[in-house]
Image (cartoon, rainbow, N blue to C red):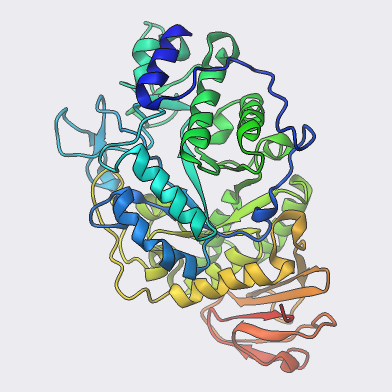
Length: 471
């Protein structure tokens, strides 16, 4: 591993790789997954650094932190900050991406990592990142980095120093992940990762950012394509540096929650919300989902609720394109049915465009027309224990209504905190009767009078009501 040691040292004074595949985790806890106390009612915001400001830099983003704090954000998830590969770099419009010519102006995909311990100079420096982390911590927020472990750029430094980390094709050449159109990235050899040194090198690179720049954890790209054994090991190694590290998997694998990840994506839920809003699936699929989720995942697993992110916005459409007039109702559902709500760069401004994925395309911020909406949802998640994450909060219980063909209703309870959510997913007014739990509920968001639900009252097209006890 001598060459790897030289590479790390040259990048930013990082420690030499430990090579230890048997780290037992933090001395402060048993060798088991324990959610950090600060995560129990946390919310998350995805930062598309390239598009968030006209400059697209870390320093330009820092002044926006107080606004995001006021929005109710606790965790800042930064899309990958590493240098981007030039070989096979992608460019062009989202609908017709292509391999850009070397030396072109295309910026490429942030998910094509050229150096795992360097900062993309277009974004800034390690010191800039430290300044961002310090500023966020001063405001009581935490910072996680997007981590791309399954593959790297074709011209990643490892392709020269550690070719053994890669899975070659039959001719011995680097190759993209099989079955994908990810032509700009080369597949790493995870099956042989313990023997070839990949496990140790990747875990050490992750540890670098926690130790040297103070970051608080990771969102792990296509985590299901990397062995769970590696993630378990990496989590233990990170805990040895920062016991209260936070880990988010872009995956829906129940076993990830045994040791490695605090939270995973609600991908299936997200796809169902699009289908319901577009009339392709009945509301019943949401009730079925609640039952299926309880069967598949442990109750202490955090699950991420969202109506948009960088993938959905760029490739599948804006909130308005996908949800139409159901956008707010689905936003309420995503923030209350699952655990932690996500807001993506521009979502609070009802961003009207698909941001270009490989090029510079700054968010149109306007006057933040949806900021109050998401601020209220974040505040509910902070102050109503029933909505807290995993076992810190309550599990959803479906409620029967008089209009179940079009209306979805559920409740959550925890330690005397009660929240009831009623949503009309049709383009027609619906008269809705339902029996509320015995609790001192008040209307926290949306329509209707609390005392009128037993006799029935009208929800407007795509209308909603959030009822909650006092905080």
